[in-house]
Amino acid sequence: MRNLKIVAALVSIAAVSCGSQNSGGSGGETENGTGGVQGNPFATGGAPSFPGSGGSTYTPPGNGGSAPSYGGTTSLPSGGGAPSGGGGSTGTPPPATGGAPSGGGGTTGTATGGAPGSGGQTYVPPAGSQTATLTMTQFPIEAGQELYMCQNYDNPFGGKDAAVQADVMDMTKGAHHMHIFYGTNSEPASQRSLESCSGIEFHPLLDATQTPHQETVYPDGMAAKVLGSTGLRLQVHMLNTTTDTLTVNVQAKLTAVDPTNITKWVAEIYYNNLWLSLPPNTTTTATTTCGIPQSFGQIGIIGAGSHMHSRGTHFIANTSTGVKLYETTEWEEPAPAGYDPPVMLNPGDQLTWSCTYNNTTSSTLTFGEHAATNEMCIFVGRFFSSPSGEDLECQAFTPNGQTGQANVAQ
Image (cartoon, rainbow, N blue to C red):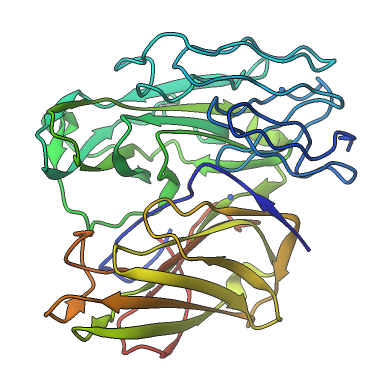
């Protein structure tokens, strides 16, 4: 198995409920800390790509092959150059033969243009697709303040079932995470306004990020499903560690393609240990195991990541088939992994994840929303094929080490 590095983060979530709800490429591997890269992470002959600070690029199907990027990977045609970046302007999309997009410097993003310094959007929606934009109402956050803010939206695709093959997420630098939740169309218009919300709120997920700019792109035949009866909800977690008041901008752009061409529905894996009790002045490891339900058949994991808070020092996730899915010592912005080929799991296979914490405080730490005074231990990932686009969820309410069974998220 080749473990692909992916720069933009996957997800950081808290949850309290149990229940449930997605050829070519001959370029070699290149890494550049300030620019971008070349290569096709899912091609049989390609190499993993490592986008730099200028953001990622995506070439629509037909321009040098279709290659997915999950969480900000770069997809360029064979021989493609590397994008430059570092500001907030949109780079010039690469031609089919692989020239390098421009876009260094540039202008600062706004409420309608993304987050300041995010590098700008380089994803180009394919012909015939439909793009919907969700923009959260701007709000201020004072120095040292921590906020969770949410906003609901009606179904952005005219009330029809949609196959979302790409999404571009932007938020003001300094945000801890952003979620695109599946929601409902039933709330009155008064509940479409910006509101304060809980950090331990859980809904099935369309996508999420822990970086200021993320572009998620699936290959031909893969997409996440948004039902016509389903609305969406944006949630952002802000922690202002600066000495100034910040104006927060949050935006998500979703690109839907023809659903009749989708053969693999992509969904979220969300495995969460809610039973944490970390004694003061002690190093503790919490371990949990959950299985793959029979209703899903065989699944393929295409990406994975972790979520801990500030006392977390080590995270590791393994399958019962002997595959190490993910390992990191980073809690704040853990870089997710992508898999080429996908990691295949059968019904009854299990996934075990462990978090190690160094609690240097004088208090016992438990599960909760605050990064400084609570902890979390969550494995997240993306997989195909979900039978009808549902997420796969395991919420462990029992002591560390208890084996559970995953459910379909409703």
